[in-house]
Length: 152
Image (cartoon, rainbow, N blue to C red; front, side, top):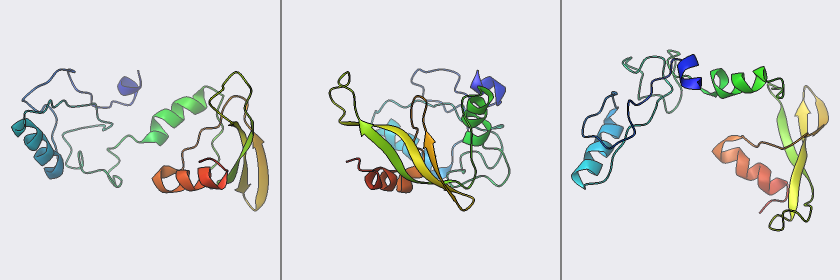
């Protein structure tokens, strides 16, 4: 599994517990204790750290200069590229999503994404999708891209 391959730390169970098995930063500790004091159910989830006992564990919301956090590049993107079905282009900017009228088989959707227009190394590219378009431009840029492309 992904967690085993990347040596990620996983929770030992999925049941409610009063005991934390992994270290928490101050904010998460306060949240944990607040939830417990209000009798809310509290569970630990898996974490994508090489070593949860490292000082950086639990403090990686804005990156990890020590390399302890196992981010998307070494987890999901690596797996996707290894399938041979994904090509990753660094420093490529998607300008708009190409859409077409949806077929009648999906009555709720009016349009569907079929590709993208992108800028890469001073070139403008039209990239057609074989099956789907995955938008992963972050919490700020994804909504902007969807709006520019005509999605509501």
